[in-house]
Each structure stands twice: as C-alpha cells, then as structure tokens.
Image 1 (cartoon, rainbow, N blue to C red):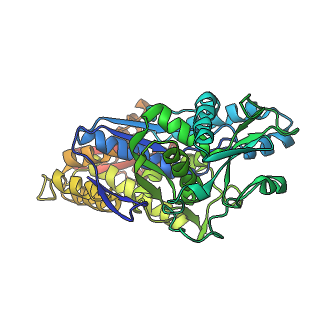
Image 2: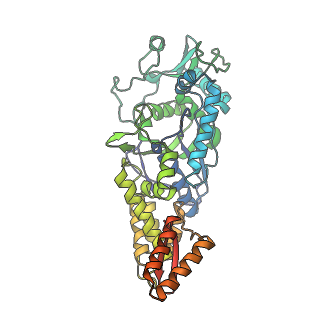
Length: 433
C-alpha cells in the first residue's frame, strides 16, 4: 500500500504486512460539540485502520483529546464553570458523537491532562540540548537551531511566513525570535488549572502535547501521522521540530485530509458556520454521512450542502434496495482485488465507491456486503410489526378480489406508520421509509 506524504510531496510505500503500522491522528480540542468537519479525520483514521487490518497488518491507532488549551479557558469563563469540568464534559460529547458513526474506537485516546509528566520530561530534553529556553516562566523552542523547520509546510527560508503567533503581546516580547513557539506557559490569574514544573507553575503549550502523547503510546518512531491540512502549520511543523530536536525520528508519513467546506468556505468553529456531527447524523442517518465522506478523496476538500447529502442518501437507498429486491443471478463484475487496488493506491475511496456500485448493478451481493462492511456500512432487513404485516396481508387479499380502493386505503395506513409496501413476485415486502 502507498500513501501520499505531505513531507516528501510524494507517494510512500508502507512496509509489507504484518507491519506493524502505528498511527497517530490529531483529535479535537474539547470545549463544545464537534462539527461534522471534525468528524472527517476520525472517519478516515478508522477506515484506514479497518483496511490495514483487512490486509493483514498489525495496527495501533492513537487519537488524542486536547483538554488543556486557551480555547477551553475562554469557553468556560462565560459559563461560570471550571475549565476542567467543561473539558471533561466536551470530551464525553466527542466520544458520544463519534460513536454515532458506528466505526468503533481508536486503540488509545490519550488526554493531555494524563500526559503532563511526559510533556515536562520532553521539554527538559530540549532545554538541556539548548533547543529551548526559559523566559518569564514560559519555555520557548529555538527555531533557528532546527535547520529543517518549514520543510513540512514548504515555507523554508521565508521567515515572515514562519512566525508563530503569540496569544499575548508580552509573549512576543519574551521570544528571542518571532518564529519561536511556546512549549510551556506560565500560569495566568484567569487560568484555573496548572501543573508544577522546573520552570514554575503553568501548563503545556498546544504543540508539545501531541509530541509527548505520540511517543508515549507509539514510541519514538511510527509510520503514520494524520490530521486536517489546517494543522500543517504551525501545529505539525512544530511537532516535527520538538520531537526530532529531542532525538526521535517521529512520523514517517504525514497524511493531511482536505477541509469540509460549507458554501465554499471552510467550516470552522471560530467562523461560526458549523453543523454539528450530532445534528448531521440525526437528520441524515449515519449511513448517509459515511457514504458522503466516501465521495471525495481524503486529500481533497469536500462540499457540505443539501444537494450532496441528498445524493449520498439516494446512494444508500440504492444499496439497500439491492438487498431487498435482488434482480436475478450475479453477473460479471470487478473482483475483490480491484477494490483492494483502489484502496492500496492512496486510499482512493471514490474509486472504491464506484466499484461498490458496479457490484450492486451486477447483483454481486456477497462482494457488496463485504465491501460495505469495510466502511462501517451494513444493511439489516428490519422486521415490520405484526399489525403492519396483518394490514399488508389484508391489502393483498383486497387486491386479489379487485377491491383496489380498499387496497389503497390499507397502503395509506401502512405508510402513515413509516413503512412502504412493495409488491414482489412472491407476495409483498415491508420496508422502512
């Protein structure tokens, strides 16, 4: 299998099965319900894990939960609750909402609050190597001493574009270089959580959390690091600097998924143009949401609007109909190896989806069931309540004696209960609407 690597700008071959393949995907910063765009890296990571395991690999997936962050403090204050309480509540929402997709869970979901000892130890290594320096209770990474800084994002040599933003003016004054970034932040009066460290009471910076958690759970070198392409700079650029600066090889392949766009604009909590994952699943159903994510290559942006969701819903209906009303014996169609080739070639889900439809048209239901299962999709024939079965039998009797007015009335009663009746060669079928 080969995957596109942001760092090398090309396709990179994975080792042969059984691997192992260790993967780290950046999860959410938890302070409110996640939006459907936040769900995309979760879905990609779980699908990739499933396919690799299907291919004979030993896989370990770590997906973090950032529960120490400025955004959590900012969201908790107006609510008058401790930031730790909001973070714990929102972390629970994240698990609940992603569980709605029915894809299972990552092997480990580390939290920043559970990894502070490892974070402090990693910062200490960087200070000892003079790649980091304390200043005013903070600790900053010295970008000038890490020559490959900017390579991941393609900003090498452009000092202005490599400036790391500072949340407060005083932080900028503490830096030796505008490109430097915080590894540790001194506790401020309006921040209600802190930890002790050799540099004083404070809390980790955002970027160092992932470096420490990835190494804690996957080791100093692992195969795949994933996340949205909005994390390339500065987050992932800084992770590379921290981890390699401390002596770890870190990630071998960098996967960055495209953003979900609402009317051409990136969906973002900061912009406010969000649709929560929970709302989307409640309205459209998990199957529609999963098929929607399949329609675009993981590296490309994907539009979110009524039309594309209706199309995904119609696709799921067509798969369900294939199982409900099979059309004759199986006919010639692509083999399983062709689906495997599509997924092994940079995990091409749109091509895989096209093959699934070919199996549907050819009535290759065993292949179709196996392929859908890879993506967490399965059709289970629902059993209608007995009273609806009785109405359906009464309708069949009315039709047989030519009383079509009564048959239509009974159809209406069935539909009013949320079911559709279909006439087939050997009688009827009741199907949820």
